[in-house]
Image (cartoon, rainbow over all chains, first blue to last red; front, side, top):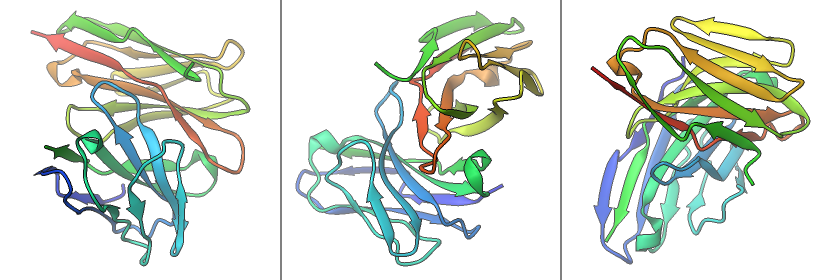
Length: 114
Length: 113
């Protein structure tokens, strides 16, 4: 079982603020992902990383950016938050090799931009 | 059109009853299919992974089936409990180097006492 942590769990901020959502995992997984999920809707991949210094954009266009300076840390940043960024953001990491590995999710960060 | 379609969108059942959730997919080439349980406001948790050659797999009161020919999967919940109230998400992985996961929009299950 992987331990993957997201902070903050809940965040309410005003428009124009810069925010960083933190994601850390303790299992040394190379592959990490950020998903965005609106209520009752499917998860959409917005960023992923295959290891240190590797970051790629996902299927859903996002104004957020990510970095991967350390294996265990994959933060997501919004330079200027807007109400359209209100959503739940889920971080995940992939355990194992090949495509029968396991995807572990954090508890999510629910962002509300006023 | 989503490549992974789930039905029903939502379901209400009484505690102790059984239910079956459906997942149809068009993802190709297919590698494996997963069912996740997502409690409200939490991250999804894996219930089962099914590869091409597996027809059925159980995890406690959860039993998943897969028909790779018709590209259909089902998740059967036996003797439902209040704690089964959650969204159940079907995820299909494509068999290529991208390890791309295709998510369904989920079935929202509510178990009432």
